[in-house]
Length: 90
Image (cartoon, rainbow, N blue to C red; front, side, top):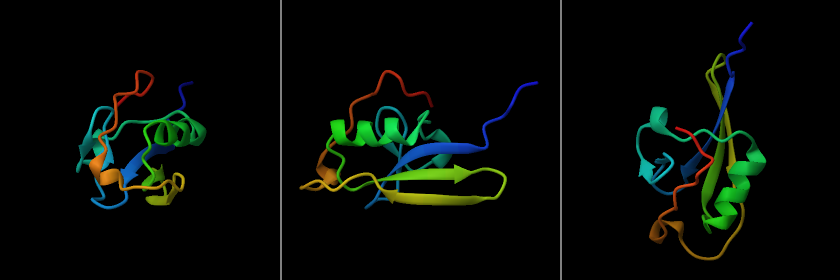
């Protein structure tokens, strides 16, 4: 029996509200890159210096989400483009 994931872990730009798609920011949530764990998403944000990024947990069945700031870092992430992460799928 194949279990379908009930939750997505994605990264959202706190200022523009766009989503990280594996290469860049995109307004379409469906194109957002999926991370395996919140730790992986948090570490990616730290490595890319995305201080204002939000980690978003989307629960498919309930239509609800939880989001929180990935980490506190100086500077504005609006001036920083993320680098493609090889382990992140879309």
